[in-house]
Amino acid sequence: MASGLGFQVLATLSLALALTCLHPTHGEETIITCEKLEQGACAYAVSSTGKRCVLEKRVKRGGQEEYNCRTSEIEADKLKNWVETDDCIKSCGLERKSLGISSDTLLKPGLTRHLCSTQCYDACPNVVDLYFNLAAGEGGFPYRSYARPKNGKGGGN
Image (cartoon, rainbow, N blue to C red; front, side, top):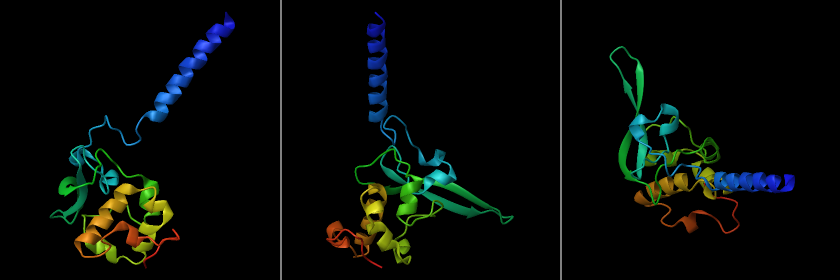
């Protein structure tokens, strides 16, 4: 009888663990609204509608800086309800407090190397999608396969 109870407990724990592991990291059930995100979560986030969030800075009359997160008109490719991880921000050579969405960021020394690194390219599809689409809009990196050398060690500057 004790072994039957132990089996039930084990089965229940196994089911709970399996459900926990299947739970999406970036919350399908969570509704992300850019305007409700804190400053530290805004950059590189994607709302529940699939629009990218953008961090903006406004200087008040007294010289105080005020940061706001808002919904941009830029749509993410097949992605919704996403707040980028700190690991991806670091691996891709980015900063959490990045303002706006601009192809000017592509001029940052070493950014291409970071974006094409295995740590960023393979693990951070949101960031890679954003910057490769920005680059394509400027006439660079028309295809992702060209931006990454065959040896997988990353490339660019």
